Amino acid sequence: SQTIHQWPATLVQPVGSPLSLECTVEGTSNPNLYWYRQAAGRGLQLLFYSVGIGQISSEVPQNLSASRPQDRQFILSSKKLLLSDSGFYLCAWGRTYNSPLHFGNGTRLTVT
Amino acid sequence: GQQLNQSPQSMFIQEGEDVSMNCTSSSIFNTWLWYKQDPGEGPVLLIALYKAGELTSNGRLTAQFGITRKDSFLNISASIPSDVGIYFCAGLVRGAQFYFGTGTSLTVIP
Image 1 (cartoon, rainbow over the protein chains, first blue to last red):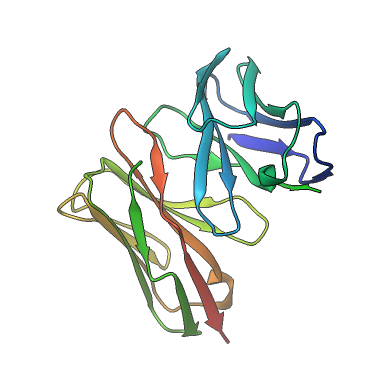
Image 2: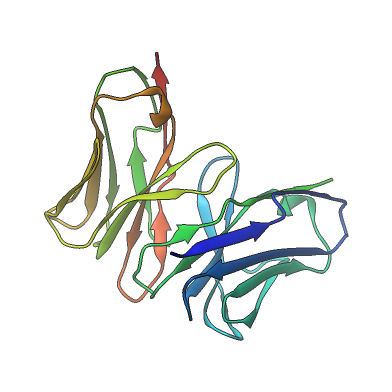
């Protein structure tokens, strides 16, 4: 069966510091991978998605970037965090573009 | 982007009652998904719907893909305390991305 791992679970970082969140998927190959941000108001905002190694599509211009160095690894990064980057970050995978998404347990990021 | 209107925003019900919530859009969707999210965790897929009119059950949960393809419904029968959480709908436009509703917060009073 497939599993998705996301870490860390919580993170407190000062403004201006770098960020690296990691997500890995097991039990499948060549998945579509996604990064979402969930604000306190519940809505899920798609940040990035990837259909293959090195292929990244950005949905929202922002202070963040994503990379996919390996087939089942997806990384969310920032060089300098802003206060507005605080939120709940969710990684998800799907078999194809129209397959249901399966989410990790998220990372709660607080920028102070 | 696409707008998914999910209602109600919140519900407070007695244990044992049935629950109904829905998701509507002005656009046509090819796939509808329903998720449940517990506090501090990621959303968990409950039901996936792929054809207009499709009715699918998962235990006490039943979801329907609206005939117009612009809406979907989720019903929970005989609610129990562990049903508490936020329920999200998500719709897919072919060739695009999934769009999520803003969620329905469910509180079950024992």
